[in-house]
Length: 113
Image 1 (tube, rainbow, N blue to C red):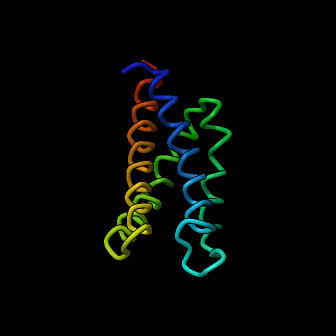
Image 2: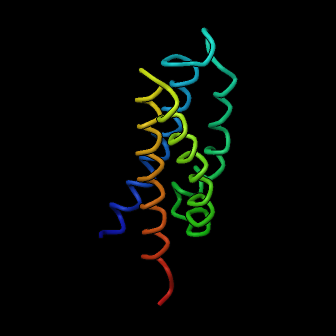
């Protein structure tokens, strides 16, 4: 697979996951009307954003481990919630899975031979 496509997939899925988390907890399906403090769950996703956008291999390595927390949360919420919350959780699983696969592929493609 082309390195540019892998890079763009990682960037797009991370950014989409950040926006999904904000929209989910503030507007689309918050736990409490008017918004939820769970919106702060996206803060750890901001930590690797700069390194991912700049193609830093080390950031891809540790961010691939960080994203598994969001994959697990999405899996749990997809099986325990109904309605809009369930669909948003499925989207979180898809986006975090796409980021994980692209981050691992990026690390493998950029390793020294």
